[in-house]
Image (tube, rainbow, N blue to C red; front, side):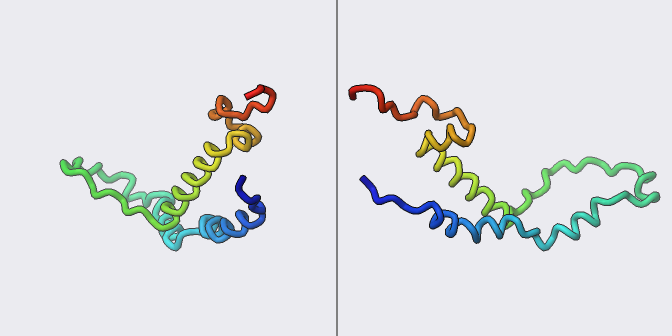
Length: 104
């Protein structure tokens, strides 16, 4: 049987990840300004011709990578602990719940 790990230790390790995810990206202010109302001259302009080549994929930022890492970690922890997943309201792994009532 593995030694019990305190839950506060896991929370302490995940705290920097959570704080990094909660902080706004430095480019958010610039993109918000660009998404505001279009200028009247832009609204009446004819739409440009569609480009034939696809635009380059948007580079993934560090915050998005961290969010993906955190989401993957959460999914794996729920899969490894189906009882905790059920407690959190996720029934996907209910078929793997332990059965303490059987003789096996």
